[in-house]
Image (cartoon, rainbow, N blue to C red; front, side):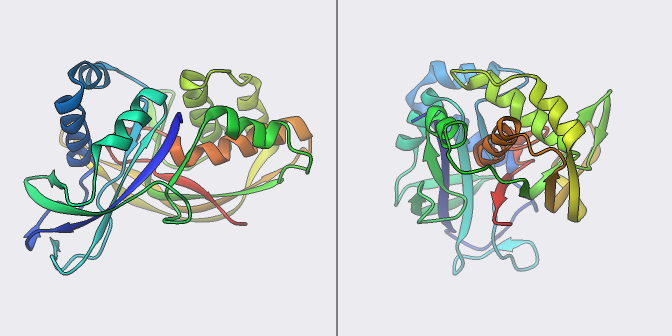
Length: 268
């Protein structure tokens, strides 16, 4: 298994006020747990720049005036883009364990990695994901709907951009696939996305990103976008569908290891 989307149901041990977004805290909790078991892997993940083989979410769930409640449950998600990280994740969390987020203690009540348990949970291999589309007998879908669940932004020509243009979304996914998958996909996929995909339906809003950088609050887009293909070429559409499914593991855009760019494909 080289691709894993792990969802935790957690419960706070006491009522406590926390920042609205905890991507950095979730990131720190993950690396701390990995370090306790495999210091070399933790150091490797901490030192890596650019594209990282994992993503984290912020804490999701109901709050009361900014406070998490012990009578409520919350979810936290981690994904892995390499077999090494996926294997580590499967052993890191267990029901009954406690996880520390920004000095608040949470008890783990469920650990889920199958879609039947939670819509954001999943596990597979790059080869299985590729075979599903590249060897499929049915025609690939020409409309794809992506849900952006946390602020999503991109870097283009030195500037931050928040509108999820097809070439930025698919380009981000292509970069991650080619960084970690055993077989690379053609760079021309990016051009197909730019020239032959169009956003046909948009339900988006801007939202503050889950962390501050150098005193500046970043923003990103959240919501859903439907992308429609203007060219029905079977091969290129298969690659687009493949990358759309990959989004659940890879995330989209910048800072996905800090809670941004949580994304998955949903039904049209």
